[in-house]
Image: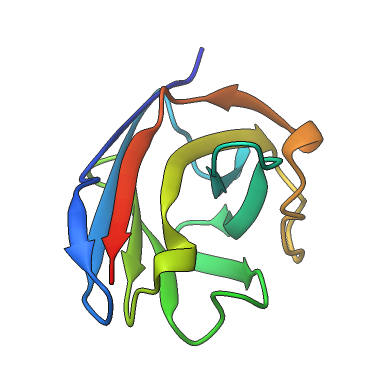
Amino acid sequence: QLQLAESGGEVVQAGGSLVLSCAASGYTTGTYCMAWFRQSPGEEREGVASLNEPKWNRYYTAYADSVKDRFIISLDDRKNALYLKMNRLDVEDSGIYYCAAGRSAGPKSYCEISPQLYTYWGQGTQVTVSS
């Protein structure tokens, strides 16, 4: 059973950077797609980034167009921790950020960033970008 717990959300000024962490208890290489999602009030949950690790230290990452070249998703296998480094933050990036895990995409594939494909979710962490 995989358990996820996010941390790191806070208030940050536009243009700044922030790193979110997700402790992934029970994570095993080659078993899960890992991803970050976000949700703003009145909006649907939006996929931000995904990571597939079919083998130790081999990663396939994917990003939503809105965050490409600004956000970086990464995984520390030794700590079983997923990260989201967010750069050049904009007020539009505000929302609750969720860590999620779903079935692995296979040995040479990227993980789709669609909420319905993910089974395990953390409780979320609030990110507020002020102008």
